[in-house]
Image 1 (cartoon, rainbow, N blue to C red):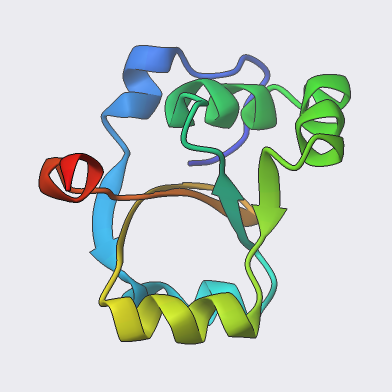
Image 2 (image 1 turned 60 degrees about the vertical axis):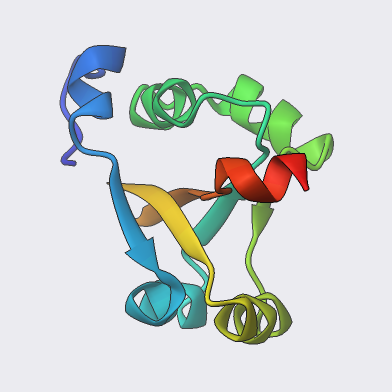
Length: 107
């Protein structure tokens, strides 16, 4: 996504959310641009706030631990788990939520 004078709509952003395994996302994790969004937050909504430079709400989410920068240790664990993430690029960041299969939530 590129920045513009007006932030894209939630619907537009939802169209840009992709699913990928961790190894494909590793370059973003290594460069410190991979931000994990808490499972209770809507990825497109957070992306819209980032695109709109809503620094106050983003800072609040970071302070509460609802947005975290992924570490090398996280990457190692996710690779072992063969984890997948839904993600969207809001330059220079990659916002992501871990993909949790329904069966893993119920078992």
